Length: 345
Image (tube, rainbow, N blue to C red):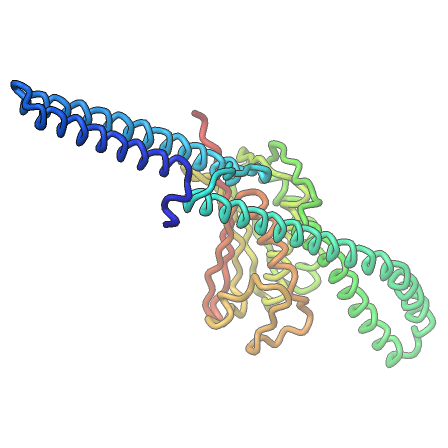
């Protein structure tokens, strides 16, 4: 029987059998020798045997409970982040076989985690190398394109192509930068350094960054919020996230449309809302807009790269925040970002 492989179970059965045999032998002796009050002695012996068996069984299950408690503690240690946590399984038996399988599962999970970490590092290093390799030719192409525009002042056709070429070079440069940022966030190689920052100042800097584009495209950019609200965040990364959302609003609005940047403090969250009255997002696309390189079959936009919103989401989540989107076609889109306010206990 597999049940009797375990030494402690085997000892338990042997002790119970030994006590039963001893009780039987003593009972036979009392009855065969016809002792006075033999029945009473047999009863006393049976009670003593029962108490001994109960004591032995109690001791066994107490030891089993200690073993299970130690196993649970090791599992909790592993869940808490200790990858070296293991359950002792140096005995034989079905329970220790289970412990061995749990330890094997832990080893497999560690191997998968290590492989995933190596894959992320490889991807980050590869994209980083590609990005750095692209910077030099991109810089050279921008210089050549600038010179070409200067030489083509009196040649409108060539100048028009040079302007288009500059736009495409800018797209490539943005793509390279966003790829590098998002892969670094994925690999966990970027440290989010948080400090107490004024939300109004952050939004004001973003408004200044887009003010020229707003004027050039004849769109309005409005700010609304309390000047005293502060947020514990990484200023540069948060500006990156919100700027990507504002850029998305500019890309999907027309001449005369407006973009609103609002912020307020609620009971438990600080909320930032970026909304516009542009073309809106098709309902089919709402669940996919945070996917990398996602391109809608309904969108006529040819400028988007498909990394701005995923990058914004990754940065917001790195700040323990959430981002939601609500949109209606031809009415507008609203992105709502919520940052939980830490409670003081």
